[in-house]
Amino acid sequence: MPSDHTFLRACRREPVEATPVWIMRQAGRYLPEYRRIREHYDFMTMCKTPSLAAEITFLPVEILGVDAAILFSDILVIPEAMGMGLEFHEGRGPVFPDPIRTENQIQALTVPDPSEKLGYVLDAIRETKERLGGKVPLISFSGSPWTLAAYMIEGQGSPDFRQAKTLMYDRPDLMHLLLGKLAESVAAYLNAQIEAGADAVQIFDTWGGVLSPDDFQTFSLSYIEKIISGLRRNGTPVIFYCRGTGVLLDEVARCGADVIGIDWTVDIGRAREIAGGRVAIQGNLDPAALYAAPEKIREAVKGVLGKFGSGPGHIFNLGAGVAPDVPVENVRALVQAVKEESRVYHDGNHIRR
Image (tube, rainbow, N blue to C red):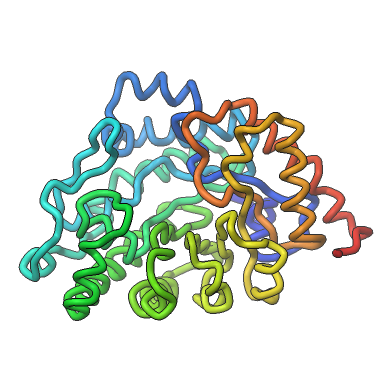
């Protein structure tokens, strides 16, 4: 991948002609083409079959014209590789049938060799890169230690993560033991992704926002910093997306990532000011805006672009993943609006307000 691609330049806060755009969950259920493939394969088969993962990853590049592809995979492949049984249930999502409850379970977890336990992901990266043919960069990813731990302890998604927080408060030593193993696993996994050819890597801390500010620093951000400091980046941009932690943007901007992803509850202009040029900002349209008419989507896009203002360092995205019932034409309208409306902010004549 040429290093001067628009997306990669934006990650480095270098001048671009237009704001690049990609969308979290852009290769997902809202696409009829994805649903047709899904009719023949279960979710884990699609994740673990490199040719299928590559095909699904490529779909939104071809259909939407986005400026980056994100590998079709799942954050929970790491806990599975560490020794936990993982099941996907229709209408319920991923489930760990034997969630972590004891010290013995944590002790039994292993730090996997990515080439041995997660080789199918690395093969998918290589196959996707070949299929993309340099058209756009490929982003690969991992969940954060805290987010992975929360799923592993609860056994599935949770409204309050009571079990995970109980362990955190009752036995912080065990929580740190688990998070330490996860941090080591995530760092090795991301390094393997970079070696396999990923052009950028993103760390998802989906549930960082359920923690208090102090607990977020202790049980999430400190491990993110450890992971990023251990990456053999070789110029590969690192994106850190943390949902629900807008009040901690200054601390998050110091984690070592090149790009900080923000959700839609944060004013992107304020986020840019807080970041102070240390990182690029990714985001942050409310995903619900995609239910509106195309002309309203364009207005919402203009609002985000206007708040960020002129100059480099912005990657347009939603503040969370695209919902499965959003019309494809609305997503296409979003991408087109960003490409057309953002050019004025990069022509050198626009004054940031």
